[in-house]
Length: 472
Image (cartoon, rainbow, N blue to C red; front, side):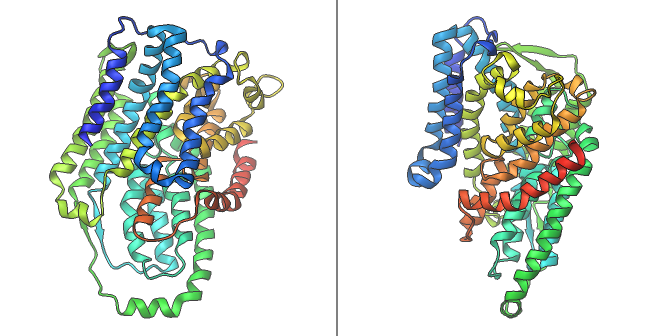
């Protein structure tokens, strides 16, 4: 892993460091729609290649990500010069990607050091309890952390069930996505918003009722569905459970709960404390509190690796592959989205004028229902973190204004990016991880398009209800 990371950094630094001046000078109004092609290319690869060419994909997805990143960076260099190209890419990587991947990686590492040992029985009440607990934890330890903590004991509780696929689909809906909408800790898009100036508890105030409505509805639907399916297999399941060796409840790797607290404290610290320290790296403005926050994240992850017994991670079947996949693919996504963000920021003067028109009323005000659906539609297929940034920029990109007079617009963008990240496997980073873990345990999950049938049939009616209740 270390060698791969060093190679990645060598590529970035070798390309950027020789240039003496780093200034972002892209004018989104001047960029043609052709600049979208690399971004669309990497996202289509993520959607199609795992099904069409699985062997090639699993061995080469990192190279594919670099290819599409170069497909953006090289034309920028040729057409706009080294200063503009390097400055644009540096802002994407240093300003957004690196803090993002450090945050996700730290949560993944720390949560992966906690092993819940038990003999839970996968009854409808127990499974619904797992989902409800995950909904709470998602806002404390992130959708990634909560999903990684609970997915393994949930699998163990249901390993003797015949009907289990729906449980893990609803797990992705609730724990890996919708529930993590109340704090920047919850989901990567909100953390990126926090980096751009959105206050820590702003989302708690504005998304609490929509989240409770969505999660409450999903939990009720799940309980009814699981009860029906459980009754079809109840006799054989209970007979199998009667012969199971009971294991007392226990939690191993408890030190990681303290480290999770350290991560939470670091996020809060960066949001409320102004260190007064500022510096510029490759044209990117950095603050002392932001650098300290990221350093604490890395220290917490390192402490978790050092203090957690290897047996705990072995029991969790912990591997680096899920987070490495996210890191490599998101590298490509964050580079290729650079011109897309500038085009969206150009508003009606840019190539995305038709999209801007869809989210703008005739009188020039924001159409918040369309902001929700457009952000959500793209979040389900373009990954919700960069999509949040795209529509955040489209709405003006000024956090102070969006939290006040634009509050309903920012609510719609936040809801769309977090809630509809559940629409597909590629909508949010934890979705990847949950599917990989479940399949590694020998359990079947829907195909990419099969999962879409689940999300359209269950989630879209709920999202229509939320639009009517909160955005119109």
